[in-house]
Image 1 (cartoon, rainbow, N blue to C red):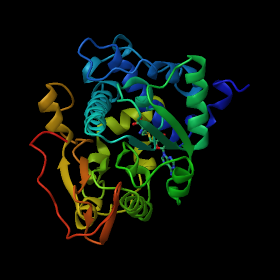
Image 2 (cartoon, helix red, strand yellow; image 1 turned 180 degrees about the horizontal axis):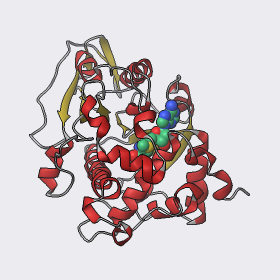
Image 3 (cartoon, rainbow, N blue to C red; image 1 turned 30 degrees about the vertical axis):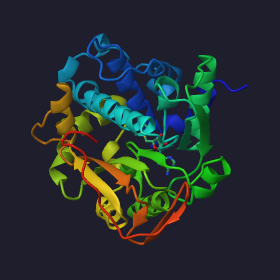
Length: 328
Ligand SMILES: C[S@@+](CC[C@H](N)C(=O)[O-])C[C@H]1O[C@@H](n2cnc3c(N)ncnc32)[C@H](O)[C@@H]1O
């Protein structure tokens, strides 16, 4: 049997290591009295990988507290993002969606820690190495998922639809899609393909949430202490990992395909929850946007008909009303 230490290669290098970074932030947040989200599994991933075994997993282990650019500010950003996307997915599930697809799932434990309605399937797509490490740690903890969980190894730069379909995913049923902290690392062409695939596989009433960051338009963020501290302290050069190409306008593309699209800044949710990062000079988070999209209720797209659970519904493109301010 593999040990977690023997499987750390995929999470110890390259973009896989960013999954540990998010896990450490979730671990620290879990132990705050005012936690926005709690993930009891997160600290076990951090401790199990040699690359992160010495990172903090509790607020008391963060030297400068909230002022710490890495575990304070960036950590609270990840905590806020986790909470907002937890709420978003659960809202979709409680409105009737029974398929959830986490693209670039990393060490996300939503399949285990959220209160899913009966009959929910959660598909996790990431690299084989990251998923193998995750599985080893979860098995050791004897963790039991709260939904039907299917972990799928695929390179999201390539064609991943067949892997999903072969695992039982049903494109005729609505889906809640999530790409949390993923598109930043993908080449522009891969992002375009990914969005086109999601659109093709989405029945009416599907939802999609994702995060983008436009570094080309915001070059000043490169000197942010968040990046310099992350590189110096834990050896992760986020700016080198982010794809440097100009980003495609996926929100506009989705809108043209008939999705209702809402664009938010993280600060919208800092205000809403009363906790989280606020703007600062040389702000690493100034270029971040969280996008929430919903496939139109009548199933129509600009490019043609969308398959629904009850068949194919033709019709004109509709944008639908935007959600109330502040809600994803
Ligand atoms: C910053 S982590 C975010 C993980 C998770 N969404 C979360 O928020 O906890 C980025 C994840 O995307 C995955 N990833 C990046 N590029 C990928 C690709 N081309 N194919 C599959 N997974 C990829 C990495 O392995 C990593 O787990």
